[in-house]
Length: 481
Ligand code: NAD
Image (tube, rainbow, N blue to C red):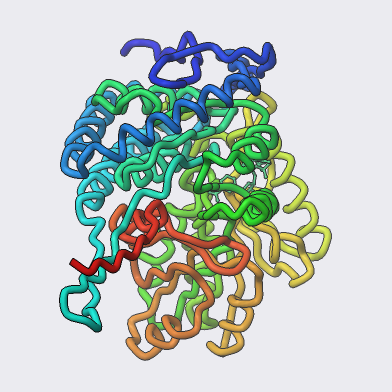
């Protein structure tokens, strides 16, 4: 086996050229498994941002004239290149983000599927004809690309989260400036190269890195930018949504979650525990749809918790490149501190740690898969998104009271349920305050289905036809021939 290598150079992509930014500032890229630097990333200057906006403006003028049919061909070619280079892209991803290589490859292959889906959906950006009130009049609704987009994507899925924005924007005929995460710049670079080589014209995609607040403030305010798409935390989302409002820009906000899992007495508790433990510890829990608050009906509670704890104990934590590892390190030392503090708070308020609860070793950001029980309502973890490998188990008796608690947080992203009873499933479908509910299996986050939240979890969607519509604007034309 060849020793994996990280990228030797971390360039920005502006107007079809790979360039070094000109601010003179930057930061080290660090391997979360060792906390050793593996690369140097430069930050964009104001002149670089200006160049990117100019390029996106020109790129939009070119790209919107390319037919949806031709755009789809180019995008499909990019998807094929992503698949062909999955190993290379996934290697960069594991190096800089920490997730196990198998998960990194799944992320990359899943991203290729997202590109394919949007490539085709762009060909179905249908308008409509509305019956007119007078003879000879045609009332037409035409869907047009909204214009140059500014996308801000996070470090938990550096490739997938960038893909959702880039693919949908390009399929709709928009150009995009995407600010990918400074902590994980290499995999988006490798990924964007596939679009370049597939024939996406200069200026249509621009990729840069820098001081996040400086870039977002500049781009959101810029008159050329017509649409914002952000994935990240609720506080930053609220800040960027206000800015977008101030400048009358359309926005999609994919923010945090605190997913409830509702396990009923009649469920197959073993298979529910297997699936949920897998999803909880995937990407070390740094997933906005990660299952976190487990409401388990009384009769099933002991069995479910015992099984889940066994599964948590069996997760082998280690370097993402070690084939034996089932969970890598947390992406950065901030997450380790956040885990320690939120777990200590729960413990001090009376929670029991059934397993885990501590960091592992002192090199790298490794943390134990953790299960808490007996957590009081006033513990921070009951209302703050842990964004890490921690699950909270709670027994419940009455469905209505449980639902009230499940719906009590300002978050409303993903939710999970396990029951064989159709009436219970229908009640949950009608009553859960969430953007997504998946019952008896994991069925969310596919390219063809809408992905998005309600309440503080944000607004807008990144999959399904909704994901494409986010980049289209409506023009109504009434024509008397
Ligand atoms: P953070 O709030 O500092 O940053 C979150 C993301 O927003 C990062 O990618 C960051 O680069 C970006 N960001 C921060 N300030 C910005 C600004 N002014 N303009 C544009 N982008 C900006 O938090 P963090 O420590 O990086 O991540 C931890 C928290 O973020 C977690 O608690 C989680 O809730 C949230 N998060 C959510 C997702 C998601 O998929 N929804 C992904 C990553 C992080």
